[in-house]
Amino acid sequence: MDSATLAAMPLSADDLAALRRAKHQLESPALAMKLASIVGSPLEKLIARMPSIASDKVNDATQIALRRCLQLALRTLGRPMGGAPLGVSGKPSNLLHKFAVATTGAAGGAFGLLALPVELPVTTTLMFRSICDIARSEGEDLTSIDTQLQCLTVLGMGGKSKSDDEADYGYFIMRGALAQAVSKASSEIASKGFTAHGSAALLRLLNTIASRFSVQVSEQIAAKSIPAIGAVLGAMVNTVFIDHFQQVAHGHFTVRRLERHYGTGVVQAAYQTIDVSLDG
Image: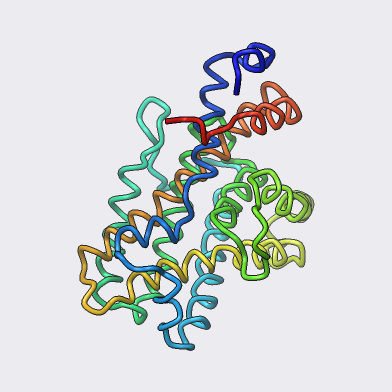
């Protein structure tokens, strides 16, 4: 972004810097690249070697994990999320959540695919709590169903779904694809209360998120499929997993905070103008 364009932006210097960080976080390298750098092998080959039953296990575990997160969200509507560690001085407890997820990853590294039905719901719930903590740190109201659903959609923003083509899906395109489903589900819950947890709109939203999140889960499981991966590497894989979604959450809720102040159009225009490839 050149100096003339920068000067013309209505955002303050601090907010422009925050938006630049957000774009870095939202357009950081894909999870597969981050995991491959740790396990030292392309994940495509590892995924191809996984047994066919693994795909069904991933899909089932993903659905269970997301439903557990949704149940947690619905139980805590109208009051602060019980049990979610809150950061000090408004900052989210990212390290605390990473430590917790690393612990579950150590167990998963020791037992591999067999541990998936138990580990993934626990890991995903911990990540969801971390995402909610990040949302709170950016001024979101966690007693709102819309905020809780926005936290859930972060799990669907971490990568492409199996039905996506090779097009480059930017943040606002991906967010827009989820926005209508979020709006309908939020409206149904607001009007019908807890009885809407099985509504068609909410199930459509969960399925949309699941189709994207399961891709990331498959990559995580593939990274753990290396023989004798052990507890240490399993913990590292899980740490990269949660760090990836924490970055997406920081970026997403920073953009939403700025939109509340400046308006969506202004923030989106500024976001599109920022060229993160020029940053050293």
